[in-house]
Length: 197
Image (tube, rainbow, N blue to C red; front, side, top):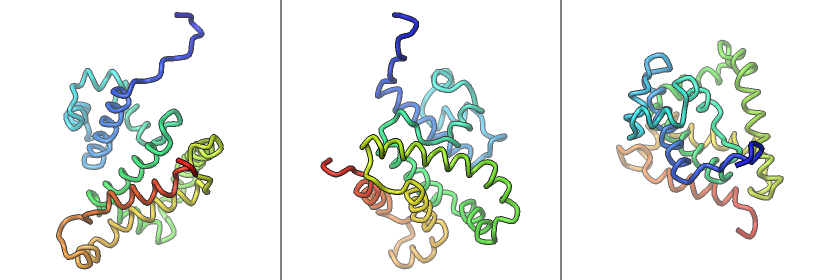
């Protein structure tokens, strides 16, 4: 194969395994933090061996950085955004205290987190908006404002962390918001599908 040949696209199994690893890593980091998390824990949560995990990611740091940079520009746009919505919903329901802690900091005007928002979150937000806009420009997503798409995701999923007590009363259940997953997947799918698809 010539040296200048384009790299081979990852297979469906490789893409699936990467997603399993990233989802597992998100769960493990959320519970144990970056320092407390281990590759063994992440591999076990993903149902893979550690050598198999290391085939996809060089180590814990690369996993952590990848999680902070969630939208894969080469992935299927709708799948990438729906997976992001699902991760946010899972975090809101599984880690409501952590989600509320962050939300309360923002509601107070971000007195401690303002430097992080400006130095880290804003460039990441701009980058993700750029990726989404490139998908829109290519006709792969409906023409919407990427910024407000991200805000809508944050708002819709954060509700399940902030208003869990209210949701349990209104739905008359102790389960964590049954039906939220298919509803949000349908909502964002209908919003994002280009006309004619």
